[in-house]
Length: 337
Image 1 (cartoon, rainbow, N blue to C red):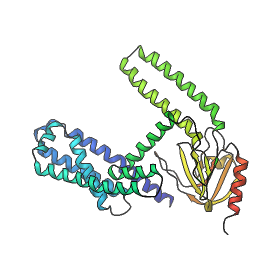
Image 2: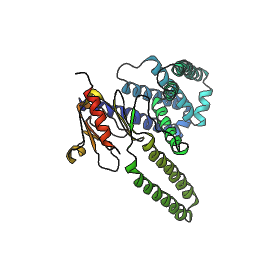
Image 3: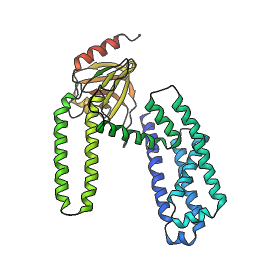
Image 4: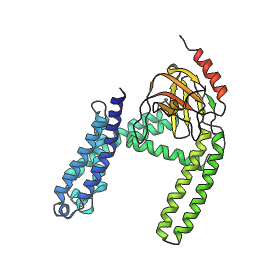
């Protein structure tokens, strides 16, 4: 089963990366002298490559037959990509071909109209909080992966720039357990070193190249802001004990729900081999974990950059592990047999 999951995840990754590469290569091809000599043929070929690539990616990502809404969205994305990515010569030929241009506009408008209706339903629906409804509504108009990435970026920036106090993010009927106190000295040291590194970069690179200085300024300062947001997220996103289970969090990096019915035991003592085992989800940051949850079934987990095997153990560190272990043991004892 794990091997099947790995194949599916690799297919999902390939279906995300390969279209970008193929469409970028097609965009380069329509800017060659040969394409300029035969602009209509280049336009039709460009449109066919983009539409075919997006449709194949949609089929690869779908577990079954893609729905009509997804197909219309892929065709609308192809039309918009061709218009945006075509050079002036190719775009001029498109404007001189009214049937093709009108067809592309009709597809885009049809997708926007259909998606707007569905987005309105998502916003006005009662399920989830306001942020989830907005993300769901925006995902009707734009690619969901892009919306999730934008939502994550905005969350980090909001955390870094605007949240300087207040309570942690704890839903109703949940008990929070902090883990950030042991991270505070290391995080403060990391911020100081980053600030010194930024200053040194600006002073040294500024004598060499003004352009390089501006590039380093953007990269280093944005990276510093993201670092601040990540460090602050450790306090605002504690580990939660909920009626459904244990929500293991490590700032923005990890957010894994462990259902109560999947937990066999909670332990404070374990071996290093178990912690380093690939089948263990180690959520302890810059420290050794002091709690381990043993599971009765593999727990699916995903990583942005690579596929990981399901977890049969979950390890993490808390500032007050004894209270957590007592409450969780009591919750486990209250489960129906």
